[in-house]
Length: 156
Ligand code: UDP
Ligand code: MG
Image (cartoon, rainbow, N blue to C red; front, side, top):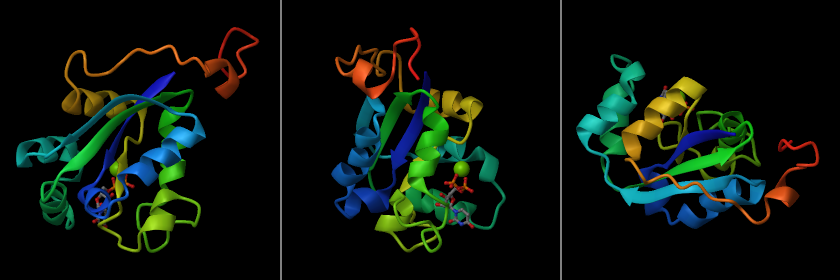
């Protein structure tokens, strides 16, 4: 099982899309194990996006991410990181495929509704930035054996 960090960016919250976007991840079968509404500080935005420092879009990105509250989520599942990236779609709303979150709900390249960790190292780092001790739940989902084939003993 992997856990990944998803952020519903300020545009998603302002546009009233929280429920519909969370629904995309839930209906796919991912477990919500952490969830909160918060305002990202400039310092936290800088740490979260440290790999983009110095890029032309960096200042605008930090301004955007700190401009209004966001929803942060920890999502869990087998292959959750890659599955979430696929559900999100390509970075730019202008060319994200229909059927993806970015493809269905937006047209902007910078205001693209959702962040998702891109690898296991970044997921671990980002989850630690946004969730404190005890804020991520361990839950035995009653439906687990219908979401996954667990006949081998491992979810697949
Ligand atoms: N971004 C932007 N212009 C660009 C590239 C990225 O405004 O040319 C913003 C966009 O909001 C994107 C974020 O910076 O989601 C982080 O970029 P990254 O390349 O990591 O894309 P992601 O992993 O979010 O798909
Ligand atoms: Mg990225």
